Image (cartoon, rainbow, N blue to C red; front, side, top):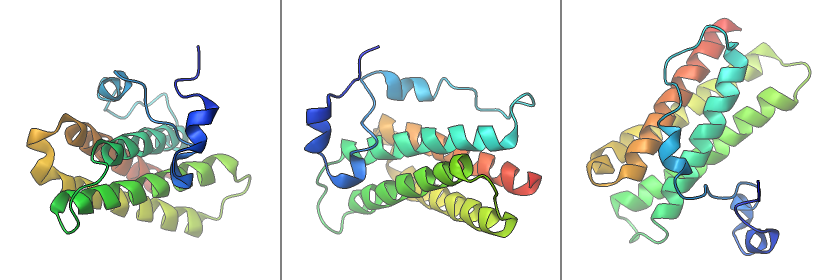
Length: 156
């Protein structure tokens, strides 16, 4: 499968997005088709990592869908929160996958931060979601990520 975004195009994007290219068309809609219920055959850590990655992609897609909203508008806040929420979700997934020994207190603190970020993005984008499919999809991804982080926090 060919990379959806050539490397030359990645360099022209802001530094925060260079490691996370946007979804090819049609992929964002398939995020909703992923299973939303907790699956007993997937361990909580793996589920949380995948939910965080899905949420980060969806949040980046939300932010990219509204490139320059008017300053002070509610959508500007949604874009800002989405960008920051994507960064928090990526950091959470990275921490869960790269650390050999995890300190339980630090993991719980990071998971709580991720839950809070997802909750905030979801609540801020909810009033605008009726008119924008990307906001509804982002809200669903945030809800799944929040639930997966909560389950992992209880499991450790």
